[in-house]
Amino acid sequence: MQSENTREVHVGKKQTLYKQAMYYIIDKITSGEWGTNKKIPSETVLCKQLGMSRMTLNRALNELHYNGVLVRVQGVGTFVASPKGEKTMFEVRNIVSEITKSGAKHKAEVIALKSIKGSDMVCYALDIPLGSKIFYSKIIHFADDLPICVIYRYVNPEIAPDYLKQDFTKEVSNVYLTKVAPVSNTEHIMEAILPDDNLQKDLRIEANVPCFLLKRRTWSGKTRVSYNNLYYAGNRYRLTGSFVIASSKMTPTDDCPLSINISEDDKNGTMTTTG
Image 1 (cartoon, rainbow, N blue to C red):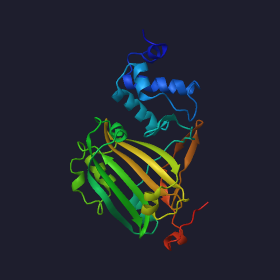
Image 2: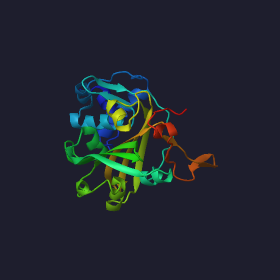
Image 3: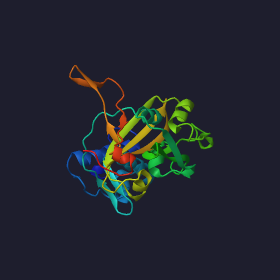
């Protein structure tokens, strides 16, 4: 006999199994049964309750993790995330033009450019089979000699088969991808974080300097092209935008870019956090 939980999740046969699992988990959270920071049942227990494979459940958990509903800690378990304030996101302008507009000279340093096995999270983000090979790049962008942004980019190789052959010190990787597969849709999720050791080294900042993490996915038509993690030093960028109030709705009048904000102390090598 199926449990009450199993019958509940299979209501609505038109939904795919992984979406049924997502709605089941969301229902548990919104009802208050699984509170903030609470550890949810193990994958083994959930698979048994929901009557689905571990791969299907993992896709649901990864999507909820990507969207900030769950927090997954390797070797520990999966937890209900703390709620975060959310606002309509924005379009990020070409980083070269932003750096040039600030009066500085742009330089890119390619740290990695290779084919790797995609993690479950990255494969989900690109909507490709788990364990697939993907193209990966890590590039640091500089304003003069000051590191401004670190970009980890994961690319669907079927969309950009020549990605690894490019010289991204001469052309920004996002510009190249746009030529290969014109962007029809983007998704942005922004978070405030403190830098880990690697990010401190890459951006030459202290441990107490807050950073922006922008998670970005791009589509060309119905195909997902790239999944990107962009890290900005908070004392060198600021978020700006303008809106028109109409019919009780706010609509952006222009792109709302992350603008470069380089202080004289930054240029001289001293890290100071702006208020």
